[in-house]
Each structure stands twice: as structure tokens, then as C-alpha cells.
Figure 1 (cartoon, helix red, strand yellow):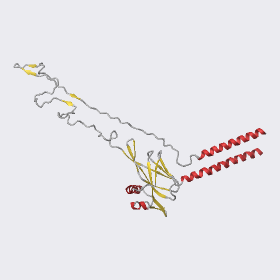
Figure 2 (cartoon, one colour; figure 1 turned 135 degrees about the vertical axis):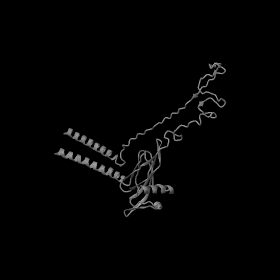
Figure 3 (cartoon, rainbow, N blue to C red; figure 1 turned 120 degrees about the vertical axis):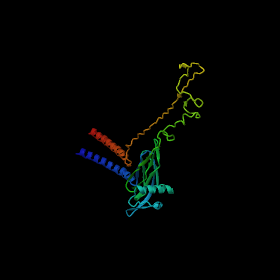
Figure 4 (tube, one colour; figure 1 turned 60 degrees about the horizontal axis):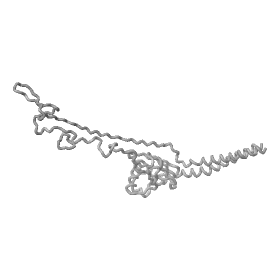
Length: 286
């Protein structure tokens, strides 16, 4: 019975230590979640702006003094139209954001927001990735009490010519390739301005007809003419390189409770190790 009581005391001590660790580590982590806002973005490294635009009064949101002139309706928590109106108003009036953040991944976390539920406007800077421009759409979100989240969607703009936006899609053809005044013309040809009887057939030798209706081919080198037509075709090839970015999106949530189990497990292991050594020593003494 004495051995069982000792084991029960050791187990009770272990559970007490675990309970103390839970109180010490879990409560601050839970408190850190309150008053926080986790903003999800479509691209990593995007800069996010946070504006506190309205306060909750008698269950209804009322615009702050800075945003009252915008005329946006946020009484019911706001809508996409209200978010766009407030974002345009803040940009036109040069209103400074309440918070600014840039995340290393696709998350930007704002912590320790002011007490009290409020309505926040979330916007961001456009970002160009792989030739495409991602323009964040403004959104309104309620925060300030329990932990809140916002998901920013982006409008995507692509260049008219993905290969080379500065050049037209079709290659420019030479101006009037049969114009002899154009030195860049790719075709060299016979100028028949002074030769009405010129025959364009290449390598054709001149002939004469005699009185006996016989046709004789002239082979004299001085009268033999030869015309060559050379054509050159310029081909241009454009190589398009496609860059693919693969990012691991399976990241741990931003809960603030990622490290407290480590301390608890280390303490529990140390206590169990000490208890085992004590019990082993006592068994040897018996």
C-alpha cells in the first residue's frame, strides 16, 4: 500500500505541474488572439493597409469623423460598394491608414487593435507577378473583439501582348516591297521602266525570225541576258518563358498557441525522468 500511495503522489504532482503550465501559457496566448485581424492575400509579400472607418453605437455602425463626408452606408456592416466608396475617398483625401503591414507569406496579421468592436477597411497595393498585375479589392471587416479574419480578392490585369507588350503582335511587313526607292525591300527585280518588251521569264534567250519563217536563238554573249530574282524571307521567332512559382500554402494557423505544448512536454518529461530515478533508487535500497 505504501508503494501505491507514493505512486499516486507522484502522479498527482505531475498533473499539478501540467495544470500550472496550462494556466501560464494558454491564457496569454488566448488573450493575444483577441483584438487581432488575420488578412489573407492572393500573393506573398503584398502590402496591406488598415483603416478604422466606423464605430459600433447601439448595435449600428456609425462612420468616424474622417469618413463621414464619403457618404458610404455602413449601418448594416458595410458592403462591397461601401468598401469601394471608402477606399476611393481615403485615397482622394490622403487619409493615413490606421495600420500598415507586409507579410512574408500570404498572411498579414494585425494584433492589439483598439478595444471595442469597430468596422475596418482593408486595402492593398497592386502587385505585378509573372507579367500579371494583381489589384486588391477593398473589403470591410468587423474586428476589435474576438479574433477576426479577412480575405482579400484581387482583380487581375494582363498585358495586351504577353510576349512583348512594347511591340505589336504581328511583325511589321516591309513597306511596298516592289518599290525600287525602298532600299530595305527584300526583293531585287528587273526594272522595266525603259524596256516595254522585257520578258520576265528567267534564263530565256532572245530569238529572231528569218525570212523563211525559221526561228534562230541568239547565243551571242553580248546580247544574252539573264535575270535572277532572289527573295529573302526574314523570320522572327519569339520565345516565351513561363515562370511558375510554387508556394507551400500549408502553413500553421496564426493562433499564437504554437509553442506552449513544447514547454509542457519538456516539463512533463523532466518530472517523469526524476520520478523514475527516485523510484529506481528506492527499489535498490529495499
